[in-house]
Length: 435
Image 1 (cartoon, rainbow, N blue to C red):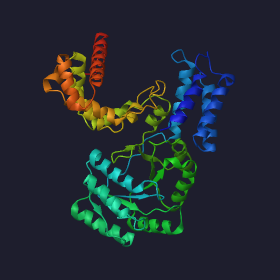
Image 2 (cartoon, rainbow, N blue to C red):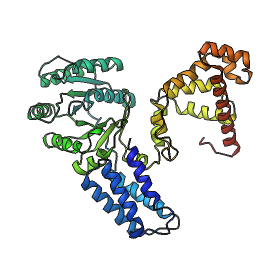
Image 3 (cartoon, helix red, strand yellow):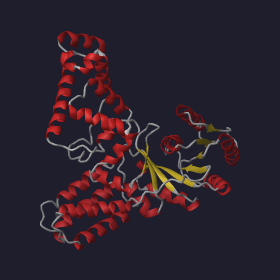
Image 4 (tube, rainbow, N blue to C red):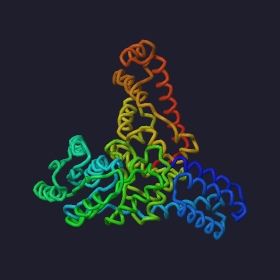
């Protein structure tokens, strides 16, 4: 997500380091680099022009105080302008009505049906809602079956009436929701390969009849600058309240995210950040700007961890690590929890300075984690708690049980000991814990 753009912006900012002050002459190269980085990332030309002009004007107009170096001031200005481009404030989803009606619209292939399932899953997990998915894509082959399959995998109800008229389906779905106490209705509508009159008439009819509280456009972030035309085309005919950018975990340049709000005034409300059905995250302009600039997203990591571990469990684990009592039993528990976070490389990319440390392109083979798990599971509970007893004969038994070579077991034990030494050093360095 934004890897290429972030690398180019970071490179541009390096040109400011070590300068005594910011002048028009010494930031020209940096501004040129920033302009090229944004244009090559598919950011709209007009947006780039305004962004560069604003950054330059503010950088030249600000005095560098004693507490800030020129490059730190420049980074702050770039970050603030990025946040402004991304929309500034978080725009929350409407959830106060009962039932709240949300209509998803978009072109065919944008990931609309999968996103409907992801959104329903998020509303249930994070906001204790009881969503109902409504199948109104009556044209695309297998669209209804796909939504039913997604609903079944999440244990979320799906209302469908085959290829009936969409307004009739929604009307009956609302009756069903009232009877079954569903408080959030998500309507999955039909898409086309392009915007056409027939598609828009159908969507307008649903909007005019039921007045959904949210009309959300689902759009593929990999479309590039043409995405702006698509958003504007839908916005001209419907009262869009926001959009969801899908496939931001893929090889996307991300320029559309920096252009959407500024050019259409349609806020980004969510981003699709993995293919899994929990791979939908609220869009936070500040966090996104910080990730682009390699400042990480610690809050994002914390929120993911909250889903799999309570605050008290996290504190207990931290205390155990720092006291030197952390063993392979604890490590196995943490390993299973980490697997629930999704692809590990996505979490690593959220760390501060991940690009600088060369972690942004790291690939973690799930098989390696499975091998480690197999090795530890082949140990007895006593061996996990006391790995120091693992001599040659025990290692040979574990090797046979796990199907992994003894060398791999030795490597795991050595890495575990190194990790414990590092924890001990952190403790001896008087690092204060936040509890």
